[in-house]
Amino acid sequence: MIEFWYEFGSTYSYPAAMRVERLAEQAGVAVAWRPFLLGPLMHEQQGLTDSPFNAFPVKGDYMWRDLQRVCDQEGLPLVHPSQFPRNGLLAARVAICGLDDGWTPAFSRAVYQANFVDDQDISKPEVLAPLIASVGAEPEEALAAADSAPIKTRLKDHVRQARERGLFGAPSFVTADGELFWGNDRLETALAWAVRHQTLEHA
Image (cartoon, rainbow, N blue to C red; front, side, top):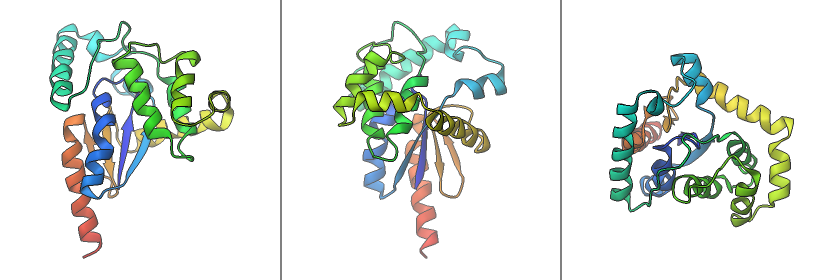
């Protein structure tokens, strides 16, 4: 098993979300989707109040070019969002709502499509509502639940768990034995590690 930790405003979380289930299924590894907020950790750890890709333009220029190469390799469309990073708080809460009913993965992919392909403002309920409906859930119910205390608490718990696991960026992958892998380009390595761990457990 691997935990897939992702933030909706994170650029490299987009290709990771689009390929993690396919590669994990091929490897025989289960995926636990873990939406969280990266902003609080970046502020605590690095004192940042904005994306480092905005704070350091030369790094941002490289990232956007690199992300285009990654998406081209994966056959994924990419449109540079007119606002970056977008606020993923509401989308993360909605994704939490879907964990128990199993629609979080499909909803999360739809949010990334909206943000990084359709250039839609994923902080707005009217943008998220049709995405919720597209995965077979009830938009009004999900949005109401997303504003409830239990869901807000669950998201805060995810942020706390991310901190405890040593996360500092997204996407990140944590294997069953607690090994941390950071970055879309570490997905294959994380899965290989998880497979070895599973093999040792059953040896």
